[in-house]
Amino acid sequence: MELLDNLALGFATALLVQNVLYCFVGVLLGTAVGVLPGIGPTATVAMLLPITFSFEPVTALIMLAGIYYGAQYGGSTTAILINLPGESSAAVTALDGHEMARQGRAGAALATAAVGSFIAGTVATVVLAVAAPPLARVALKFGPAEYFSLVLLGLIVSIALARGSALKALAMIALGVLLGTVGQDIYTGTPRFVFDQRELYGGIDFVSVAVGMFGVAEILRNLENEQTRTAIVSKVKNLWPTREDRRRIVGPILRGTGLGAALGVLPGGGHVLASFTSYAVEKRISKRPQEFGRGAIEGVAGPESANNAAAQTSFIPLLTLGLPAHPVMALMVGAFIVHGITPGPNVITDEPALFWGLIASMWIGNVLLVLLNLPLIGVWVRMLRIPYQVLFPMIILFAAIGTYSLGFNAYDVYAIVFFGLLGYVLIKCGCEPAPLLLGFVLGPLLEENMRRALIISRGDPSVFLTRPISAVLLVLAVAALVAAALPTIRRRREVMFTEED
Image (cartoon, rainbow, N blue to C red):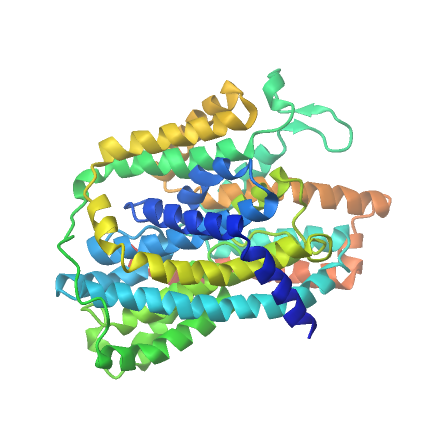
């Protein structure tokens, strides 16, 4: 009964006119930008983040969530139509989705992605509503030692699931943590790593890092590879799957939903792992495995369902523990903090309308996705024909204006340029910027809880091992680090990401 009352509060909040309007705008903008080749949900949310800072907190977060899953869907549209996935989790969709498009069945592939995403999103939203409150109650028992160990575990697991070299992912997390320490010491106020630059006393601006690393750097990379872009964006028709298609996609959608809901909470790349695992499962149990990679509709239904379910359940660690599962959730943490809200277990009691309104809005957003995207396929197809050289300078200008408007400080715009170039160099060196952002967001939290635990224990480091929950989390962190270094696991990671590429 309590759950029903909470959901009633959530829908009463989410169905307010301004919240429905901005959820619609978020889904529309997210899909519009996410459909551009090479621009995934992280870059989309990073570039559109500044426009939400003048809104009410619940409205801003509802809009950002809409941008996120709108961009997720936009990435699958690009993967199907032109074989350029918006992000790694949509890469598996391209294997069979693009083959279906080449066979003249793009409409069926796009409709399957939409239906699978909607069903998975609905189920995962229910899972989120049921699982979040008890997890938040458990999290309230955590002290500084437990939070330190939990953050450390999250960072190490993100290394194991990161794309490419585990050593490079570790280096990116260390660099992110280092950047997070720039500014005044949290206890003494002593400036650290500021190099006599007064603008750095308050720390490096989160929005500048996000927009630079995931907006400007991605655009530079895509401009470099624009000549490889090939499209088969002829007119899309026959949007509804046939009866045989509908029969074949029921099982993959249900299995993908279950896998995505379970794996979405993993830090680092749970949504990527969910898509890949779903594809592998469907291929293994299929009676027609030879069709996979040649236009099997199950290869679209399963991964897309897993991807969307994981996108919803990745909110669980954010809303209950205050920990981001991946870079988009790290951006959401930044949005919470900008609006004066500390993400974590207290949100459910201190801001119940925001907590439940955000959950309810996810279902509304998924409905809007289905209603919007299938009728607007023609619009997205035409957008794919816009040259990068025309479109991307406008996106960068928009992002720079939005960032400048936050504090009317030109230094933040210079920071975008710096982090954009740094992100581009890192990408060229084979380093993924995503672990860096996780380290940047979680580094201050790691330091604060470590120092707080040591202050309480009078400098005794054994406090992290003598508290049972903290000790278990540290053991899991060590196990994750060892697993990431094992040759078998390393080979499987390499195979996984090679298939995605």
